[in-house]
Image 1 (cartoon, rainbow, N blue to C red):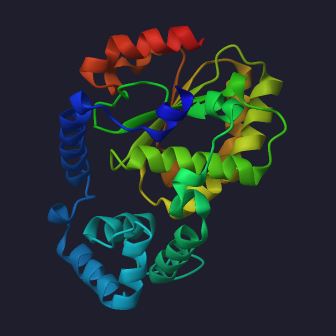
Image 2: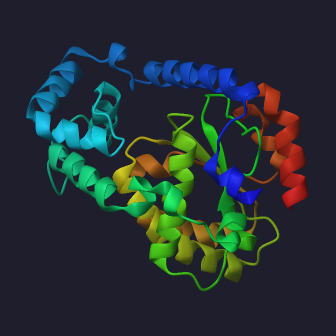
Length: 272
């Protein structure tokens, strides 16, 4: 059951629902300036300049590793660079090339069927609901349970598991959001979970530009605040603005698709 859930293969009943979710997500993000149709004249010029820098051979290698270089991909990277052709450390086209090389050389991306996720990692971070729960903006909702985070796991193993889970979700939706459940954890346990996972999230931030919708941190108290003080050092301002703190599961209702309200509350109560 856990293996099936991490693969995230939707049933035939929910396929139409996921198509609708893609439409909703595309519309919402286009209203926020993500889609190509809502770009300003200057942004369109920057986009065309970046596309001209991409050689056909690079586009072929990208398509081969499952990263089709369409306008949405370029726009996500340009938004991360504040609509400039360079990040602080390198040009955007080099960042794209780096991601293509990473996808080609990473088994969890190029050969996902060869990965057999560990049970303890699945319990900590996974796609727990079937059919999956969607946000009001059509994003695929993932769950991270701090209390179930294994204590002794290497960063590489965590990175592989996070990438495997996110890739499974992105096969169905263009964007993902995460519920971080910190209820019932002591401050020390929360910090241990953050120190274990935070370095692995850097890889996700590097190679999945613009894919993250929001992060909902469920819990309250000194432990959550102390953990946030530690984690925010690893995040840029744009990512920090996507993080929301809620002290009760019912406060998540406005952010979740109306059909999934009861399922989300029941699932979080069961997990807790």
